Length: 363
Image (cartoon, rainbow, N blue to C red):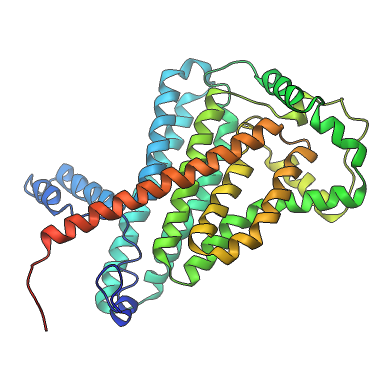
């Protein structure tokens, strides 16, 4: 049976490294031709390589580079509020350059593998071309620690504390303390840690099943959801109950191995701020929607864990209920908007293919 690209299964297997959902890789030969006609100098060479890198980008990259562009512009506009804006601008530019280089090299080695067969180099670049988004998300989240006061100099936690109290009649993180036991604490910390596995799990299954369309769709859902959350966190800085309500509890949350591990992670990797919306919840929700769309059985496995994980963010004093709601909304928006972007890109690609491929009958 021909697949959506017009390839049978054997052809697809032979050329998979060259066609790993070349999402949005529309023909830019006309643009490349104009660049090549400009000459053979250093400037023309740079433009040719840049055009090739841009051509190799997919929808995920356009979202990622779009976020970097927005944050770059915000840093420029509010540079006076940062101690070292030049370093952050350099980090943004470096990240964008790495993305373009990775896309360009990945496309080039994939094309070579198409004609000369798979090599270690092709497999190496294929792997990193698909898995670097996880490192990109980590980079952006850690960077928020420097950007939370870019626009607003004051923490806005009082607004969310008031919202939670209006909604529930209590301060949820304080009220939950009455139910705390070492066993319950450790369970909640364990499900909190499961956040780190959701996108890896969904992406890993799609990757090893060679469902490149599904894989990049899920990465795009996550990228859109995270990007929305990152921008909100920059504009509306929230510190989290862990800091703003310190001293309101009678004791720390004691537990076992999971509690010790999360305390270690929080001690060495915590970002102060960027609590609203909860990126943990947003990322988990986007990945869960991805499972719903591409592996329905996995959705039902993840759903109870994701629900418990959302509760654990409040139990562990990391987030307000408002943060959880915000994460659910942004993660769902990531799925909706990301899905639309993916479909739009594939539709445009299909229209372009119909215009450029020769017509006629065969056989």
